[in-house]
Length: 255
Ligand code: FBP
Image (cartoon, rainbow, N blue to C red; front, side, top):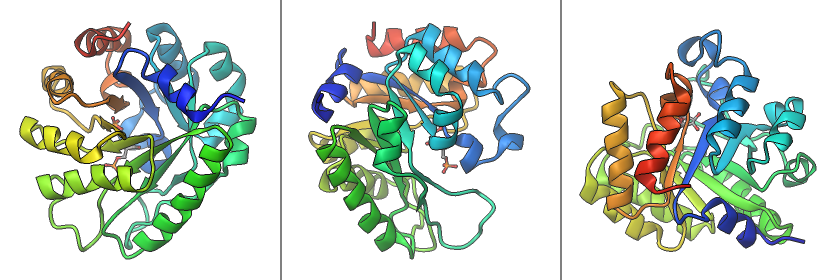
């Protein structure tokens, strides 16, 4: 059995990684993020394949319904097994929606999970994730953790204190990859990367004004010695997604 470390090393074979994220359908709904092209998971899988990204992350529904094409692409799959919709307005809870066993059956290299630290439901997500982390590692799957601070207790989710806390939570909980938001400030990203220690800190994309602004974040990933990027909209919402992938890979020194 291949260990989760060998799977992690494959994704980070060039030191950094570009992970294509496509879980926005659950988190945001089709109306805000998708158009006629990118609403189709096959369009995204094709970008992943042609762009030779380092990994693709989708929810278990897409991982299952499009399994043949995902596996044929040979791009390592990270199945997101928690989530929520944007429609519920209470304190955020990214509920467990799938299992490690399901991810294994889908041929995944890893599982993905979100924790909203600061939420009134934080304890539930911490507890559930710690079980997932243990089982995934025992069964040879890597673990990627989205740490997105949310809820009434969080005054500024983009402050240095909160971002670095998110990165540290990834390390403390045993995640192999921690996905955090980024505020555009290089010293803050450096501090986040230090805080994450040996857990690989990757940043999300977010809604950007321009490609230029987005590519500046890529440059800062290199300057801060971060693990890379786990991004979606800035790639698959572009008219030329493969060009964007190419530019990111060039900046991150990926082959
Ligand atoms: P983008 O690169 O498109 O911003 O996606 C990153 C991501 O983390 C997705 O994986 C996730 O669905 C989404 O952002 C959640 O965003 P938020 O909770 O901030 O609305």
